[in-house]
Amino acid sequence: MPNNRFIERPRSFCSLGGALLTVTALPGVIPILHTAMGCGGSIYWNQYGSTGYLGAGYCGGLAVPSSNIQEKDIIFGGSDRLEEQVRTTIELIDGEVFMILTGCTADIIGDDIQAVVRQYRNEGINIFGAETGGFHGNGYKGHDIVMTVLTGEFIETKKEKNKNKINLLGIVPGQDAFWRGNLLKTRALLEKLGLEVNSFFTEHDTLENIRNAGDAALTVVVSDFYAHQTAKTLQEVHQIPYIVNPFPIGPTATEAFLKKIAEALDIAPQTVNEVIAAETQQYFRYVERVADAYNDLDWQRYAVVVGDANYAPAITKFLADDFGWLPELMVVTDDIDDEDKPKINAVVTSLTSHYPVTIAYESDPTEIKTHFWKVVPRKTDSLYQNTFSPGFVVGSHLEREFATDIGAGHLTVSYPVVNRIVLNRGYAGYDGSLSLIEDLLSVIAAQR
Image 1 (cartoon, rainbow, N blue to C red):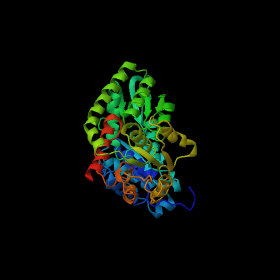
Image 2: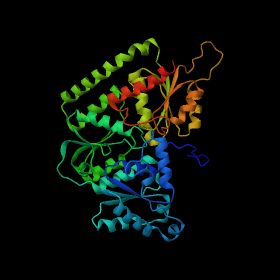
Image 3: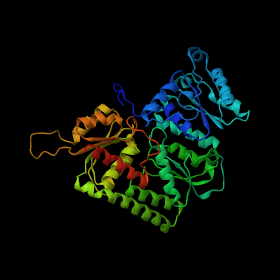
Image 4: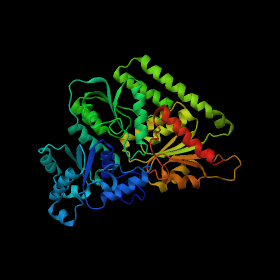
């Protein structure tokens, strides 16, 4: 990014924020921040207001233990202050595993957190440390750092593998406001193939399950970009191969996803075909209930899709291949390296509908309109001018003003999610895409 660019309204947490939300989502794991005063509080208020009002949970939010290092610690080193905070946390907080997370200040001065970790490990405490200062990257990077430490140091290595067991990665707590629902829906779908799924962050997961994840036969990463280092660690340390699949939304993408899993695990074609047939039949039984209104009331829309590298391609594919909408522009808000952009482009070039979608890479919400007008000509006095109407914007809360400006409907699905309450809703798979249809059409119906 050019030096004269700055981010006024960021679309992700810093690395520490992503790490903290990941740790607090893990069962029985207690975070201990080693950072300056204010970091924990700032992250929580961001979490509270930008992730569908995700609550703090046990020992989360403003209750997260923190060393709160100050000027004297920065000058003389903050290791003693960290050691004091760790001992106090272990005495007062009921936790099975403790994870030290560093902020920018601690990383810059070079405090040796591993020395503190070794001290308490010698006392029999399950404690780990991760360098997660915000300058390491965004929230997705922080998630991967924490999960890499966990999978490399906490999970037990097992020579014997369970051929029906998999580890599920790629859905990032907090950065994906719908992470709980997405994990539950993906997990339930894979279980229908007869698989045992370690999904790390749901209410079905326990620390014991995570500790024994080393006997999985395969790691499945439902993201072209997130949690890849974690998957590589599972492969290098525990000899568990991994496959990568784009985040699946809707029947077309989910069918391809299930077939890929079945092929990797040598599941009988009859088994996967039966699951696909049953799920597809159920999907269309629900869709047919709204088909009359969709056609009679002309609910087809032109669309702009704005989101991260999971959501933007997945929703664009669903709209074009399954829902019959016309996605004119897809804006990916992550900072994607040029060599990785073909992964995004492949989603558009492989659309079964062959709809010509324009792709842009942009995180600045003020520039979305610039990309839009390059694709959609401004209105003229010509009677036959093709305008963006009726239109719809699927994006984050930051796109609400843009949608209003162009007279389009709007649904928030990607971070930041400020104008929705999210409990267990998710958009993954067959069932999740039905929820997405409900949400999209409810916006249109509410305007009648």
